[in-house]
Image (cartoon, each protein chain N blue to C red):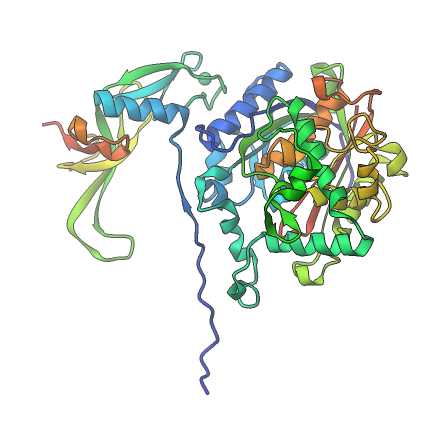
Length: 146
Length: 388
Ligand SMILES: [Zn+2]
C-alpha cells in the first residue's frame, strides 16, 4: 500500500477580459491613431497624469482636459533581464526601464534597447500604424537618443 | 467596547448598476465618491480616513484589489484599509468606517464599495468553485446555485411555503426598482413569469436570482459634532452587528439564518431597539435570491419564523405596506455588484430617512430602519440600524 499522501488536483478556472476604461480609451486611441502619448490634466494641482486618469488623485476633481506628452523621456531606473518568470534563460537579454517624461506626473515601464545608464534620454518607437491594436505593445520599445 | 462618538451618514452616491461597464473599477469608484462628496458639499481634504469594501479579487481579476482601487476611492495619502466578508462586505464596509469614527480616531470617513464582475469569465460564479471543499465536494462538479437550491428547498419544506409566495418577492423588487434611476433590471414581471422561468437547480429558477453587475457606491460618515456642521439632517448609525456561523454549511440550520439573528440582536441592543417588529419602519435585507429576503426578514426578527412569505403575500412588505421591505428594488431589481449592492442598501436607508428617495419614498415619515447583508461562505450576517 502506498504511503504517499492522498491528493486532489484543483484549479481556479477563471480568465478575464478587462476594459481599458474611459481614460484608457483616450490613451490607447491616441497611440493607435496618432502615435502620440496623452496625459490628462488637473489644472488646480498642475499635474499631467500619464497614463491618463479621469480624476485627480490629489483633489478628486474630474479631469476632462487631455494634453499631449512628448515621446521622448529620461530613464529613471533600468534593468536587463536574463531569465523568464520560471527561471529559464532568455535567448536574448531584455532591457526594461522606467521612463519619465517632461511635464508629466507618472511614467511608463517599457522595453528598451541600448540603455546603459540612468539619465539616458530615450524615445518611444511605435509599430507601423496598420499593426497597432490599442495595446501598450503598440510601442515597440524605447530607444536611446544618441 | 466603548463608543466615543455617535456617527452619522451625511452623504451618499452611487453609479448606475450595469451588466458591462466601460469604466474600470477605479473609475466606477471615483464616480461614486465624487457624487457622495458633492451630495454634502465636502472636499476630499475634509476626509480623514477611507474604508473600502470589495468582494473577491477574482471578480475584477485584480489581486490586492483594495490597493488597486486606492486612488479611485479617494484614499491617496490617507489612512486606508479594505474589508472583505464576501457578500456581507457592503454592509460590513459601513461598520468598518463607523468604527473609524465611533472610536474617536477620525472625525470623518469615506466608505467606498466597488465590484466589477463583468471582467470575470466564463462566469463570476466560477470564481466560487474553490469555496467548496476540494476533497469532499468539488469532485462532484458543484456550482454555487446548489447551496441556494438546498437551502430554499429546506426552508420551503420546513414551513410549507408555496413557491408562489417566494416568487412574489421577485415581482415586488423588480417593480420597486422601476423607480430607481440606477437600476439594472427593473421590470414588470408577473408571478407566472417567475414561475415559468427556466429551472436552474430545482427549486431555483432564473427569475429568482439577481443579475451579474458592475457598480460602486460611496458614503460619507462624520462624528456627531462635525455632522451637525455639514447638514441639518444627519442620519444616525445607532446599531451595528455582525456574526458568523460555522464554516461547514452541512452543519447549519438551512431553514433559519441564526448568524443573521445574532448579528441583528447585537445591532438592536446597541440601538436600543426592543421590539423590532414594532420599532423598525422599513428594512433592506439582502436579496440576491427571492427566498433570501424572506429568510433574512426572519433572521432580522421582523416577524416569526416562517411568517415572512405570508406577510409578503398579504402586501405588508410593499412600499405602502405596514413593513416596507427592499423599497429600493433590492439586488433583484437594482442589481448585484456584490459589495456595492450591500452599500446601496445603506444609501437607500439614508435617502429614505431624509425623505429624499423621490418616487421610491415610503409614506409616513419613516424614522428607524435596518439594512443587512449576507456572505462569506454563506455564513455571515452584517446588520446596521439607522435613524433619521
Ligand atoms: Zn487635482
